Length: 81
Image (tube, rainbow, N blue to C red; front, side, top):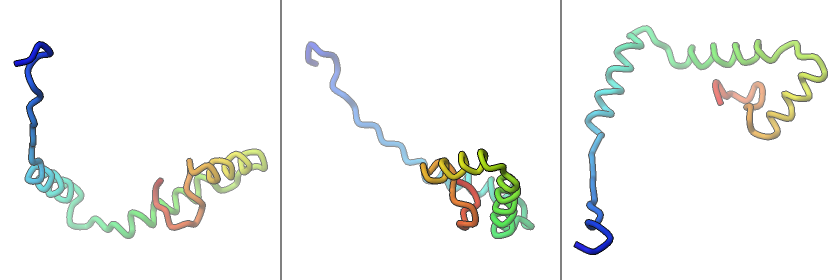
């Protein structure tokens, strides 16, 4: 042992089995009727509705946020940022 305390110990934990179990639980919770394509389509429709009907100032702010990468471009096929 040095005067600076014990030497660091390498710690390795394999969580791959836990991750597979977590994913199985998520898919089980979603159920057999979950349609990921329909879910993404619904998110895109909600995004379009949320940002429709903006006045000129709101549109300017929206455009600035898109240009800055804060929001995805409208109609760009992005369901969520």
